[in-house]
Amino acid sequence: MPDPLDGLSAAQRAAVTHPGGPLLVAGGPGSGKTRVVTRRIAWLVEHGVPATAILGLAFSSAAAERMRCQVEALVERPYDELWIVGFGDLCRRLLREEALEAGLDPFFVSVTRADRVALLLERIDDLRLSHHEIRGNPAPLVASLVARIDQLKESLVGPGDVRRRAEGLLGRAGDDPAARARAERELEVAAVYDRHDDLLAERGALDSGDLVLRTERLLRERTGVRQRVAHRFGHLLVDDLQDASRAQSAVLGHLRGHGDVTVTGDDVGALLAGGDDSKLLAFLEEHPHATRVDLGRSRRCGQRILEAAGAVAAAGGGPGGKPARGREGVAAGEVRFWRCASERAQAQMVAGEAERLIAVEGVPPEEIGVLVPSVRGEGGALASALEERAVPFRLEGRRRCSSAPRSATCWPGCACSPTPPTRARRYAR
Image (cartoon, rainbow, N blue to C red; front, side, top):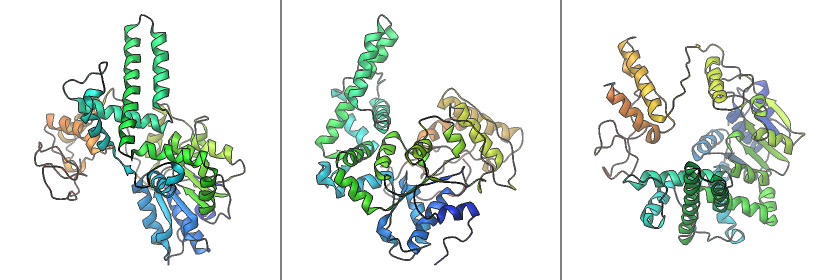
């Protein structure tokens, strides 16, 4: 098998071969943080650590799958015994294994956001949303309420907390009609939150937020379970700690109380400047004698890209600090930062820039790329803006929907076609 230390820098090698105890691996985007995690897992296995004693944790299933593939290329079996999982998968597996202690049916159903939106739409007449605007179609409103519930659960805020805060706002509103309207809407949010959780409980279902909250409660209240998990996983490795929500951080606080824990995160200096809510600062406070390894220069991004990312973070109220060092030999290019009032304004700005590049500078449309966090989310507004200007484009990532306009896309399982999605050819969007 390949040597886990091949191709590593001196700093990466020091992190991978860390002899034990709390370890913080810091670096900017592309500096090799995930590579350190995967190589350290392989190095531990190579040095006799049982695969069942290692827990590799990412904050999405996709990131965990990439980590697993990298580790499997480095170790011989039994790599299938390794726990390299996304956070939701970890919580789901722990709750099923400890269902009796958690007070759950071990065959509980894990539901998606779309499932919950459909469930609330079936009961829309019971929600009494008199202070929210439905505008003839309740689906967007219900979807936004479900997204709000998810955000509240990530912040460890329950329906009772929302209700008490709304009642306080109502008491202070006085004769201000706008303030009273906001408070009334918050009271309705609390009621929908309660109803949402009641409907899930009736069906023996848990959403993504419940998985984390029930796991946190289990580990906090059941000392025996917490000790079993800590004894089982003698080596905990967490990639991109800064991505943890407040609820996930609480779970991690119960998991990382034992000795050998490795976490990675973005630029230590920038995060420490962020104040007491910094995940890395909390880790260092919890483990004051932790070893810190700074990976330094990014191996993926040019300096201009990193500086632009820092500018965006600072403009959004994020921490400042000295930007990470970028990859050498990468063309700087030009970076501009637009701050738009709304999603539609952002789409119009992008479409206008694409039109200018094509008409004024003669750039072929296929050489223009627009990256969006979600084709389903931002793709629609961008497609409409491009169509208004007759700019040719193609949305990638989802198959085209035969029952929708030419610019639209659908998700796997769309009723327009029973065939599975096909991978789009490489076109700029």
